[in-house]
Image (cartoon, rainbow, N blue to C red; front, side, top):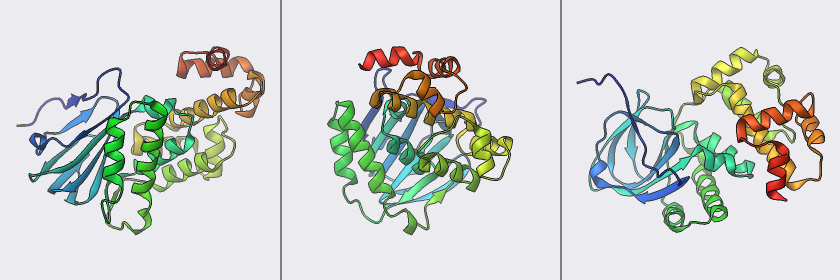
Length: 269
């Protein structure tokens, strides 16, 4: 029987931004659902079966990592016994980090439904350590190492199922490669020889976010870094990021953080 609505699951406590747990064998077979605002990474070291995500079916061949984006509808059918870990990461965990490399790695791994790994390697150890860690800085370091190790041999993973499209991927590459982030979708669209509308459509197909929303994530993170690590005035930071004046920058910053740049600066002085 087909449900009229898709269930939304929330396995994270409100105050938690990240959680790791051993795979629950009672969840071997699930019904189609989506998640309430978090990325789910499922490392499987022993099982078989299949995952279906947004209508795309991938066979389970261990070891592997399943990548379930927060907006995707997915379910799986796995064979017990199942060995592995489930990692849940809220968007705010990534946004609050001042390490742009974490954002880049999350963007890169989110282009895939599943990654087939050559061996378990250090992945189980990193997940075990992450399950026990409460310190945010240490969590960021372990999470970053986990993503980097998983993606290390990405060029050799011919069977990994990708949902990327070239325009979106090139946009993310530009954002990650530029030493200076510019607050203009039109600027990046021109570099990609396309229109802002086409670029935004490509972003929505991959992430359900517009190009402006994706750019805002990078702008705010770079703004925080400039406020936190430099002696530049708020007006100077606004200019560097491509805002017409300090007032527009302050309104933009507050829209995404609930703080003005000056308030954020005082909190970290």
